[in-house]
Amino acid sequence: MRLLFVPLVNLLLLLRALLGLPLRLLGARSRPSYVRFRLSGDPAYREPGRAPRLGLLGTQGRPEPATVTSLERLREDLALLARDPAIKGILLEMGELAVPPAKRDVLVKLLADFRAAGKRVVAWAVSTDSLGYQVMCSADEVLLSPAGRLELVGYAAEATALGEGLGRLGIQAHFFRRGEYKTAPELFTHPQVSDIQRRTLEAFLDERYGELVDTVARGRRRTPEEVRRWIDVGPYSARRAAAEGLVDGLCDEMDLPKRLGLSTGEDEEGEGVESMELYRARLPWPPVRWRKLKRKPRLAVVPVSGMIVTGKGGTGVGPELSGSETVVKALRAAGRDRRSRAVVLYVASSGGSAVASEIILEAVQRVARKKPVIAFVDRVAASGGYMAALGAREIWATPHAIVGSIGVFGGKFDVSGLLAKLGVHRTLITRGESAGMFSSSRGFTERERELMEAEMEETYQAFLERVARARGRTTEEIHALAEGRVYSGQRARAAGLVDRTEGGFEEACARAMELAKVPGPFELKTFGGGGRRFSLLRLLLGGGAQTGTYAFCPTAWSLEGFGRGERFE
Image 1 (cartoon, rainbow, N blue to C red):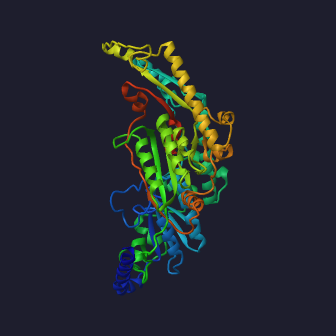
Image 2: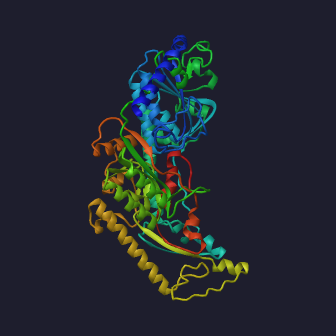
Image 3: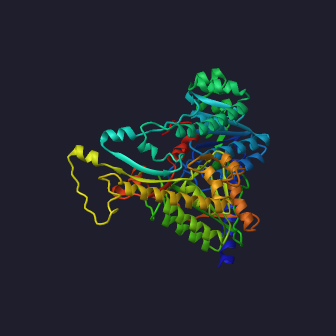
């Protein structure tokens, strides 16, 4: 069937190219000198519809022609423009960017390669923050709208402690943990932020701040001392940013063609600056994606994103959740798919249910016995998220991803004080000494505390053993790295918790296919993805009457916002 279908499709593609040739030849005489791209949100690694959507596009439906929808498409577009002698360069319009550091690094490299081909990059924004400014600094010229702003202020982290406030309401949090660096329950148990949590946040702030200084210093050809001074006296109005030398000039959008050295009448619609879509439409012979008789080999991508919970998951409001049943089903499908020669487990999770994480880990291990599995982390793989990644043959993390937090906790809330204040009376009737241990109308008895302590210790030791087996270490060696400690990707690599930090998503995919001994191009298919949403409080409350054991790291989860230069909790 494919032998008949593919030639027919290619014939139709050829006819379409031939029929449009006269119009394209006419349009070729008025091709633009600059092509405009709009960069905002979180573009996917690969083009949506042909690959996993590992990031938000920030648009609904069909995006505007200039919008960058994927790093893959941007790479192809820049390569095409670099070969065209009629193209002088690109205009990069910067919107509100929300990419992880790994994608930012890819963007910077793509722009650097384009400039190395002798082309010019002009970056323009109405308003931008530290993340967007780092990308803009890789351009030949950085421009702001006169009414714009530059929010270059560094990074801040706010840690919250609710213990005293809950106590005033009559709510007592009773949690048990293994690992003094396992700070997840401190949100509810401590009256103030602990020194350990403060040091953890400071370590990540130091890394991100140092990277910001280095990136801006290289891009603007300034010393680190000058950049630190810039950051200390930010934010900036557009005029102040220009006066301080942070940008090369101010320009309204309508005046951009003139700034680029173009005649305002050079092009009727875009005035010498058009979108990539219009540029392709005016090429005499635009690139055509011919269908091949032999299908490309396939790489399966299975996402594990958000909090890990038992069950199927669904949709709702709050942080994203990955249901163990949904992820396991996706892994089974990827393992059975004959065209999928290898699997990339895309982990973006701070953990969650210890039981659900172990279920996912076992499913990953089953698939890994059939075909190569690479775990890739560009944001966070902490606690249960890291546990899930242990089943892969190799774990890849980008330098500023968040990894580790090997530890567990469990417990419940005692709302008896609040109920008393409200005049609500509960009577707990049990049969069995520990039958009421998970009730929220009282705390734990001494016997129940002993049981919880024993369960935490057993679960923690099992976690250590799983990590030790996967990483080829002893449990004692892993314990020295564990107790809830959180690492950046580069520190995790030094500690032996991940295998590679050099290379991004595309390199990890290529490595998976290399292990499968499949050379040449390949296509991607996502299995699973999309989960219900929930809240951390609901997770810890366990529905109000239950509790469990969790491998979760809310500190790491909150640090996902680092790339945007915002304050976060």
